[in-house]
Length: 52
Image (tube, rainbow, N blue to C red; front, top):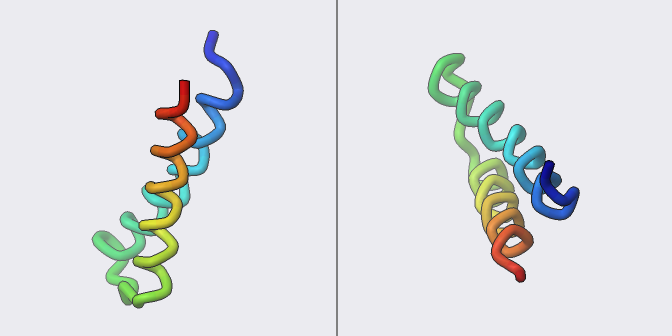
């Protein structure tokens, strides 16, 4: 069992995987907005997970 504050950011990473799947497999456009959003999700998840 993990704390919710640790698991919630990992759940948010599902948006990352779905977007990458769409870009790589389905050939969707990788716009600046999408890439910036992915970057913010990853940074936010890393910040929340790394806090003691």
